[in-house]
Length: 523
Image (cartoon, rainbow, N blue to C red; front, side, top):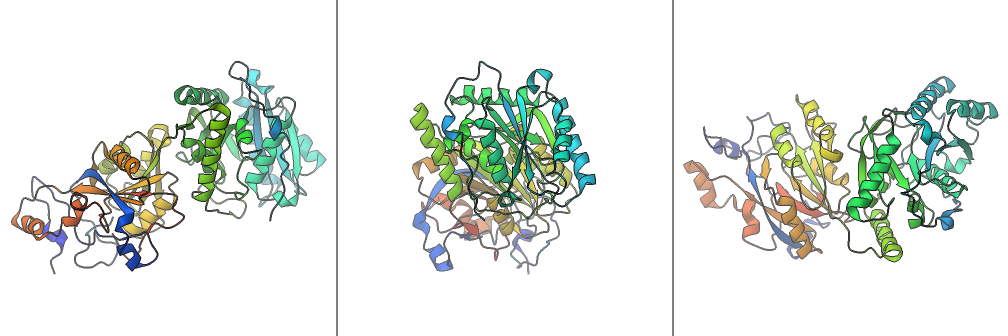
């Protein structure tokens, strides 16, 4: 049986995309298929154009498909809030800023022979990268698990203080209720840092196996906060600056926040629901809505454990990107309006998600080059972990401006629908644009979607236009005349389509799990 990919084989001069059928991958907005088909009124159309590019030579299909399928597929604990009420606003740009290094340490999963060398390296690189003029202004707040066999002794505390010689050190022994709850521990240290007579202005969240790589990282962070204030008009310190982790460069792993963050949230660093996961991206995404979330321009570090690797404790994941993130954004919005009279400065946050099996560098680079009047992040989900050019694809994240491109590699080929779901689960924006890996997006694609969102903010799904090249053979013309390519341009014909081609869609995020792609559709 001849497939569509055989009919649309590329001629010498003009190549036509190989796959047409099974492009109607139904987006699961509602719980039943019937309800999904009856949901067109919930969807408004954004007339957004993109052009299909020609496919590369056909790759072996990794999944069984129909003849008309694509040839390639792509325990609760009370926390003292002391000090929160004393956070009076003051002008600090004109004086030296005080720093607090929030440092939980633990011997969990290892012994002293392993713990001490890692902590020694961390301490030595921290001290060596802080200029002498800053050391008296930088206090290290060390959290120790109660009854930690390695660290909770008088001898250990003397030894730890000696490792940080030249920096003031404060110790905090926390009860078992805090064990393995890293977010809660960081919060306790933050509260202690701002409750002191010489309270800290900037709070940096670090780990005991971090290695600082660059001198004057504090100066880089302070300059980033100054740029945020200058470019956004927000008060100095409203924002989050993440120190670049070279082991997970495109993810905000080690954030720095100002003490005003505790004032905004009534003495809390994180929401109570966050225990040992997601605290870093949560802080970053909160301030991204005002263009106030940045990576350092020069300062780097490397994380010995954690990040994308295994951790020393059982990870407690929480669904935070929907209700919890929305609640935090609204809290900052109220505080800015009430304390500073700032209203209406929210920045749209859009994530572009591209599932890829072809791993075509040129096509992916074109997507990464998109710009718009939004905070724009790109997530490339590689659905072909054995791709020969995988290092080059991963490098797209390292070379992106401000590290706004992240590359995630699926453990195995799972199909385009599941790859889209993987990307969507890792998207923290207000809206997500889904593009295929063989399209040439129009330069104004993002702004066109933003216009549709502004006109129809209540819509869940926006269907973009995908324009195919002009047919050049009689078979291609016959397919066009037959109407089989109708759904690529469905947004030109109806304002409320029941479905859309997944090559170019925009979906509202933070829908509490109402929007997913059905895994029964391979494309």
